[in-house]
Length: 113
Length: 112
Image (cartoon, rainbow over all chains, first blue to last red; front, top):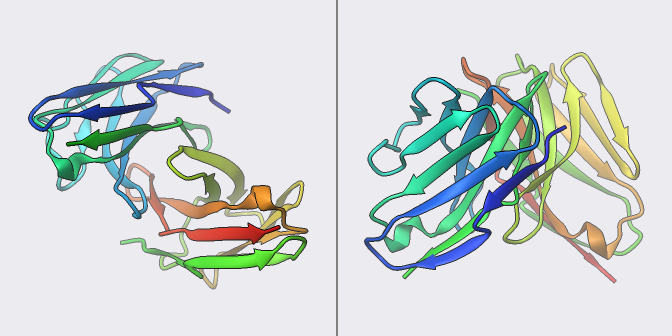
């Protein structure tokens, strides 16, 4: 299993600003994922972040809007840039252990006003 | 493209009742299937992972079954309690990178 922490747990931000979300895992993992969950919706994958390579973004998500860092095997950040109210969501970090089992962090609840 | 469907979307039961949540998937060539629980505004808690070679997996009052050939999984909750109230999501790895594809969830309310 894996224990994942995220910071901040929630935030209220103004339109046009940026927020960086941190994800820390208690063990070394190769694959980390960032998801978004809009109100009343299921989870949507934003990107896959592997250490030592550029993040791979899903259709509809771009690096300029959601830059990701993955400096080592236990840590990653997701930045939500130039925020608008439509970015109000829960952002979730996830890691994959073997074999193809995923664990999720507690989420960051973002409200953009 | 893999699609995952969960029914019902919402379910309300009295405490003590046994219940079944359903999950179906369109591509039966799955590696495994994972059930999660999500409390309001929170992250996901992994409940059970059932491998493609397994037919069932149990944890406490929870039992998950898998029928790959028919593209279905069920989550059985025995003797439900108010603390079981949450949204239950199923997910399967799909695509070349085995990204999880989620169902839309079943929102369960257990009434005291």
